[in-house]
Image 1 (cartoon, rainbow, N blue to C red):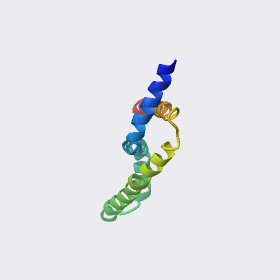
Image 2 (cartoon, rainbow, N blue to C red):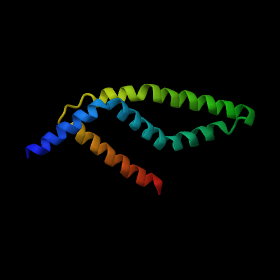
Image 3 (cartoon, rainbow, N blue to C red):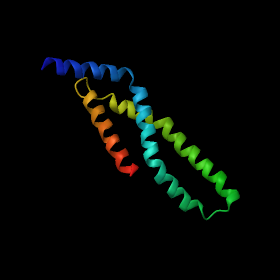
Image 4 (cartoon, one colour):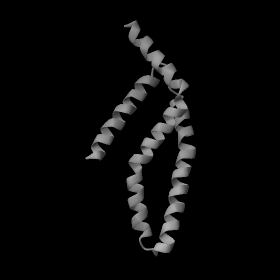
Length: 109
């Protein structure tokens, strides 16, 4: 039984060293999942504009929105994951990975 807790602690320490990369990857996955909905919402809103105005407006909207997400979200998510101790970080990341897989399978159909 001790080897299970040692393995969890080892994986948690390994994940804690790379928490910034994990947070950036989770942010990228969230943007990919939400990107379709944001694009459809912005398309319905911006279809009222002429094409000359619609293209720059969409570029500015996407650059500011996704730039702000990629600037602020990984730091916030890394700080949030940093609250977990060595016994809970690896299981939480495993559950998040399983949920991402299930969600990607559901949205891929």
